[in-house]
Length: 129
Image (cartoon, rainbow, N blue to C red):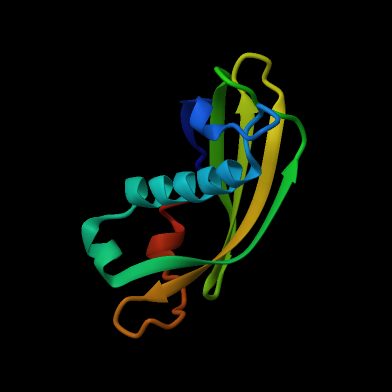
């Protein structure tokens, strides 16, 4: 299992009226790091043939992040079978190492030619294992 990591700093734009990160941003960060991992591991040729769509998403909020916090986002794929893949994203406070959120997202592998689900080839599975 390969772990992809990114860091980001909480800005004013991420805050809600309670002055902590708005939940919508966590969901966006989950999508952003999944896309970044896909772009990092796949070639342009692969991306011209295939893409992913989110099928289901579960996120647990465990602690808040506030202005100026440095966050570490980690993602990895736990399972790929048939047309679906399960991806975990964890977001930590980089200073305290506290887990702020964790999510499990199911993605469906799609063909650009048909715009329909397609079986994940072993060559794609090995990109993330």
